[in-house]
Each structure stands twice: as C-alpha cells, then as structure tokens.
Image (spheres, chains in turn cyan, blue, purple, yellow):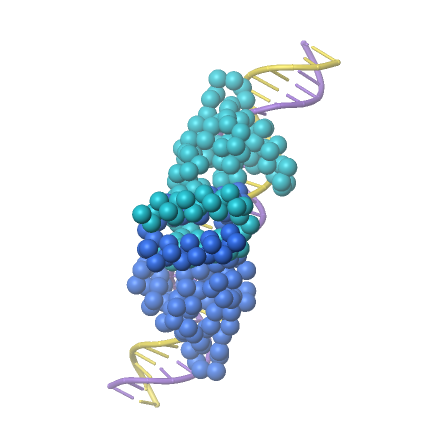
Length: 120
Length: 120
DNA sequence: TTGTTTTTACGAAAAACTTCGTAGTTATTT
DNA sequence: AAATAACTACGAAGTTTTTCGTAAAAACAA
C-alpha cells in the first residue's frame, strides 16, 4: 500500500475528479508531461491488480475509481517519509515545511488552532 | 542531489557520526538490517562519484564525509515530497504530521513560536 | 460491408535502484 | 616468509519502476 510516484499522480487525478476512464486520466496527465496512452493504461491495470483502484467494466471503456482514500494514503506516505528523511522527527519536518513554503494566514490560523487543541 | 533511500541511510550515519570508513558505516547500518560489506562500499563509491560524499584516500581505508548538509538535503526532499504527495499543499502536510505523530510539549512550543514569527 | 478509430490485454524493453561475488592489493599475524 | 585478514575496484545479476509497441476485439463511419 505504498504507491509509487507515478501511481500517486494517477491517484491525484482520481481524487480530484472522481471516477475516470483511462483516456481522461491520460489527458489530464498529458497537460503536465509527455505520457503515452498505453503507459497510463498499464499503470491503471497494475494499480487495479494491486487493489489501489476498482474498475467498472460494464462499458467498453472501463471506468476506474480510487480504492484508497487520499488522507489514508498521504498518512502512510508521510509516516514513511518522516522515518527515512527525518529519522522520525516530525517536528523538524513541520518546522522546515513552515519555514520554506508559502503558507497563507488562513492556513497558519488553522494550524494554530490544531496546536491549541494538542497543547491542552 | 536527490539521494535514494539507501543513500539517505548512509548520509544519516555520516551526519550523526562525522567522517567514517566504510566499515564503520556498514557496522552502523548492520544494527538495523542485513547488509553486506561490499554493498555498503559500492553505495559509498557511487555517492562519491555523484558528489554526495568526499573522501580522504591517504590511509588505506578511505574516510568518507558527507558533502551535502542535512538541512539542505532535507529541504530538497521535503519540497519534492510536498509536491508529489500533497500536491504542493505544505499546510495539509503540517496538519497531518502534527495530528498523527507524537510531538512533545517542548516541540509544540517551538512550533508555536515559529508560527508567531510567521504571522507578524 | 469494409476500413478506421478506440480500447483492452499482453509482453517486453529501458531505466533506476539494490545487492553481492570475485579478483587483486596491502596490511597483519604467526 | 607464508598464511590470513582487510580493503578497494569492478562487473554483473536481481528487483522495482517506467515506458511503450503490437495484437486482438469492439465500436463506429463511409
């Protein structure tokens, strides 16, 4: 249950747009980089085998749906990332993320709220 | 400048312990998992070629040193990770990290301080 | 109905990453 | 001095991930 970078790209399309055909996903990805139709197809077939996607085969063009939630997947990836890149120190990661990425005042407020909840 | 997982393991050893021989690194890694001496050697040679490590060859056992700083490397990895896993939303990542990882009150305080600085 | 397009399935090549064996050299031990 | 151990260099095999070409089937158009 640890999608590769390419699989993640596809999951993002499905999370954002809901169920899609291979063509729809491929056209979406095509906006950002070169990628052949059969390449996308193959990925989605593999992801289906792995259980990352479900598919509806009633129509000739199959429709695929993400079988894993965005939050769960991101959590899994994050856990792994904190381990490998930050040796388990989530707070160091948070500090670096806040320090070097543009975050809107709204987002900062939201984070502070969570912080309050955690502190009490 | 984007170390793989294995390369990162080695960098962590060098960041924590300073310059090391292959044997020292190998023994360190060996505490956590099976890994052959020549495997570690090969990695460190490759990393040296890539410019990730420097080495001192005056002694027979060469001594290797990290050529990239921990902060810079983590920043690079983090940028990449925010992109691929969180579609660029650093605040979502921060929220998830704070929500699911144990963070000590001290660390929370430190984060709050940074938050204050960013807000004003 | 015949040819063109769309789609799936399959296989396999290409690329990136991981792992280790072997050979040769230098040091150490007996 | 001879055997043993430690170390580097090299090559290559094993894995995982990415990429696509080709063939066959289904839908569509002329």
